Structure formats: structure tokens, C-alpha cells
Length: 429
Image (cartoon, rainbow, N blue to C red; front, top):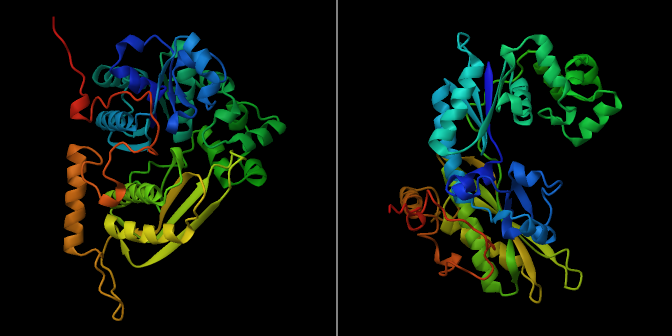
């Protein structure tokens, strides 16, 4: 028995936690550089097709509708996500954190529970302790739990909780018949088109399809989906999060870069972020790639894009070492006279941190995973964890906190729960 707990309009809900004055207003959250709408609450979604639309096209309309607009506040969303997953983990013996706002919970061995009541208890606890609205779907397989969660969100009479296991087969099928096949977990746009051409339009239609026929027409993955819709578990919880085999750090600049030193600072900062993620998962990288490009949508400027890679003699997680190699890559591809809009850093050939076989004839690795290097990086990470990101950083990243090319977030809300200087203040009169 599985439950899927999913935050409703998570980014927008996070913004409302510390702003009770906007709870009943339409709220949208913008992407990097305030480019397009990436999240919206129910009131904002009622406007129609606004998701992933450029903000500048809808700015006047949203203003007329008294919509509250926020830039992405990743620090706030990440912290509230961590708190939510920690709380949800207390309600089950095992948990799989599926995404920033989704957790699978294992309810095996809990057959004596009234799952509808238990799901309501979980929903109320998250709202009470964190102020975040969630939906809870409970069923015998992960695919059905996902479906139950989807149905719970779209049917107000369910109050955002649906335990399919508490219903008769007829009632289960009634709900599944209302759910479009494109909403089934793992069924993408292309598959849903093919399925509908085969007269499989709803989730119930897919449930009643022949698994062998589906496997022949598609693949074993969709066959397993059909089996899971028929109460045959084919997926267990992924209790150990697999290490990333490639770490990418990339952002578009708020304004174009034409100066080499500015680009060097940007690349260094992206490498530092990637190296921090590398150390967090206990890994090292043996290959670094740096890519830069101009704005492909500006036809009146010189177009240029290029990338360069370097393979390290020894794998490393040392920020300083990786920045040195990143600078070498940048030097090879830099071209004067271009207006650069974006840079990207990729750390690949990733392996677990461990014993390294040194080369007898190679230079002594100054930045290999020796005790001094590990101690230095540990101190760096501890300071930034405790005092805030960027408190301690490499000089190559730039001295100024606010740099002209840094990401534009003009409607950024305070980091209420992670920054001392931005803690909310309660005034008692």
C-alpha cells in the first residue's frame, strides 16, 4: 500500500505561508530572470492558459486582475520542501522523496488503518505545522497512488484526499473513467496521442487494455503501467537516491556579457555551485566542460556558441582546482566582440569519493582528495551552510554580491526561514 503526498501549487503556496494577505488572491511565480510563468495557484490558473507564457506578454493583464507576482525564491522553496518531507517521513516506515513537492510513503502492514482518515490526518498536519496545502492519494501501487492524487486534486468533494483502496471496484473505475490517459504517470504527450488513436482515451481504458498488446505496441514500461493500474505492483520505493552522473550549472544572464573578466567570474561561480553539489553527494568528477553562447533570438547581433572540455588526471571535488580547469576551457573558446547571453558548466565522469590510484610519472596532485583539500572544502561548506550561500567563496567568483550580469529577480520575496536578516518580525500592539 502506497501514498503519494503532493504539494498543491507548491511554489505559489510557499509564497503564501508568510503572506496571509495573499491567500485568496491569484498568485504566480516566474522563472529565472523573470522570464515566464512557471507556477500559479488555482485562482491564477482559472485565467486560462497562462503557464509557461512569457511574463511581459501577460504583465498588464495580471496587473488588472490584481495578481501577486513573485520571482523564484529557491532558498524558501528548498527549505519548506525539506521541512515537509521530514514531517511526512514520520507517518510511514519508509519514504521515497520523489521531487521537491512529492513524497511516496509505504503503508505496508497498516491494513487496520482507515486510510481515508489517515490521509486527512497527514493533510491537516502539513497545513498546521507548515501552512502548506497538500493532496494525498492512497492505493495498492505507485501508479494508482499517483492517479488517486490527481483525482483528489480535481474533485472538490474529496477534500484533496482519496484512498482508492477504501472504495469498491465500481467506484474506483468511476473515478478512473474521468481521468484522461495523458494524466497517467509515465504517459507523455506522444504516447497519449498513440493511445487515443487506439481508442484508449481514459485511465480506465488503459487499465482494461491487454498488457501484452500494450507491450507489443509500446514497450515493457507501459506494460508495467497497465499492470499497476490493475493492482499488480511493479515498482518499489527508491529508498536510496542515486547519485547524479552529470551535474550541470547554467543560467542565462540578466544582461549580456562582453567583457572576458565578467565571463570568467560567471563561469567560476557556476563551477563553485556544481562543486558544492558534487561534494554533497560524496562524489568526484574527472571531466569539466564549459560552454558559452550568444542570444539565438537576437538576429541583429553576431551569433556564436562553443564549448570546451578538459579531462583531469585525478578526479576532484576541490572548487579551486575545478575553477582553474574551467578557466582553461573558457580561454580556449572565448571570442571578443560577442554579446554573450548564457554560460554552462558540466561536471561529468563522476565517481564515488574514495581511494585514488596515483600516476607514478605524473605531477604530484596538489588538489587531489588529500586530507588538506578535504578539510578546506569541509570548512567552506560548513560556513556557507551556517551563514548562507556565498558567505565564503573563491576570489575568482567576484567580490561583489550584486553583479550586473547576475540573475534578475525584481520581485523576489524574503528568505523568511533561511536568512537571519530576512526573518519575519511580529509586532505586538
